[in-house]
Amino acid sequence: MDLLPLAAPALPLDEAGRYVAGAYVVFLVLIVVYVAIMAAKLQRIERELRELASFAEHRSDGERANGQATPGREAEVASDV
Amino acid sequence: MYGKGLRPLSIATVAMLALSLSLVFFYAPLDADQGFIQKIFYLHVPLAIVALVGFVVGGVFAIAHLRSGNRKWDAYSYVAIHMSVIFGVAVLITGAIWAKASWGHWWVWDEPTLVSFLIVFLMYATYYPFRYAIEDPERQARYASVFAIAAGAFVPLNFMAVRMAESLVHPRTFATANGGLPAEMMLTFLCSLAAMALLWTTLVKFELTAKSASGQVKRLRRALDAPVPGSGSRIAPEVS
Image (cartoon, rainbow over all chains, first blue to last red; front, side):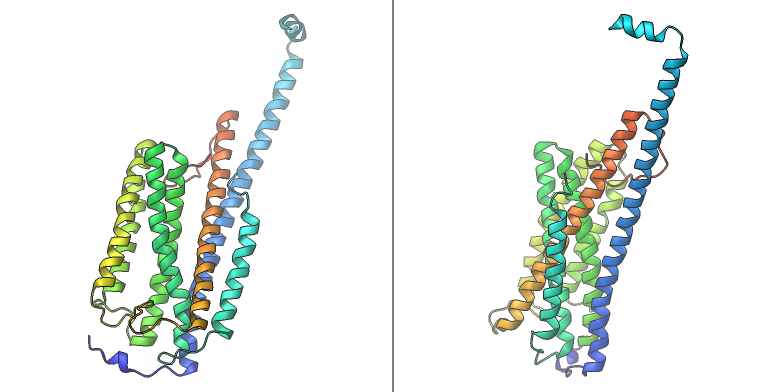
């Protein structure tokens, strides 16, 4: 490659402006894409937490219902204590 | 735990980015040689410095992991390298745009600075498949740490070799033989560098917080003995 570009004069403002804007927009887009990916991850975590909370509630409801339905369970628990 | 202090850090980052952009476009003088196109310098060079330092930091965390055996340091190392790779993508794209505007070429293959950065970037691009190829989490963390240390040691060596090489067209930013930057440009550059360093730190912390939350959800799922959904990363280490 020759070294002629070294001697090239500075680009006019309208042309240079496009390149500068391009570089800064690329940076901005990368950050926005990253934040969007992180937002998707956080949504997934929130959804999983909701599922787990619902699972835990159903399980405790089920255990409570089983405890009431089993005859003699209260007496068993009382004797343990 | 990882989210502690994230909000003030984020605010400081946004404020610093706003300040540095204001300085770039309203305070720093136009370069006598390159004119307006030189404004890319305040984005490209800080990104490159932070990315390279980030790779070294990833190596330092990997040393801490191998010394202590604590998986937390492996997660730190992974996230530091991950973030530096993203910054590296930005460095390559902004550098190509600057090269096209200044030299008339998107890429110059006989320029040591460009090619050396590409080599470092490609080396770290292999970190993901390398990590992904190992199933056992303990071995994965150990091998990834060894990679991070070796690659992290290569970065400063590579940087020094390039500085000593005879450059064809890429400018030496802090070459003192022909004078450094004027005070206004130096102040703007330092603010931009601080903004990029803060951005890197914030994003690393953000990523670690998300990984920690994900790890806690998995722990909770195991404790509740709940069914496991199909989602989840095999590459990224868990943070608890």
